[in-house]
Length: 89
Image (cartoon, rainbow, N blue to C red; front, side, top):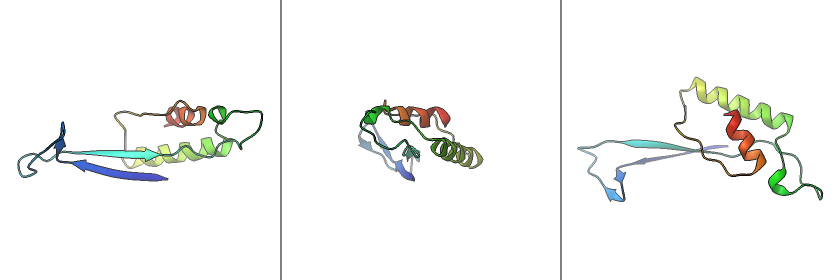
């Protein structure tokens, strides 16, 4: 699920008068796609995306490209499924 939060008018903790300076930053949070089921033999951190999950991420990446939503930076947790999602984006 995509969630968007637009942040404007704050720089280094100072509120700025938007009449003189209009700036915004789009922050998008993306949760990893379908991952392997939990198991007793695999730690939660090591659960990978399923084939379906990889296809889901590719579709989201295509949507983002088509809409011009190209990130300047991607931050991800160290979990395997999160790293896979970040690479596919």
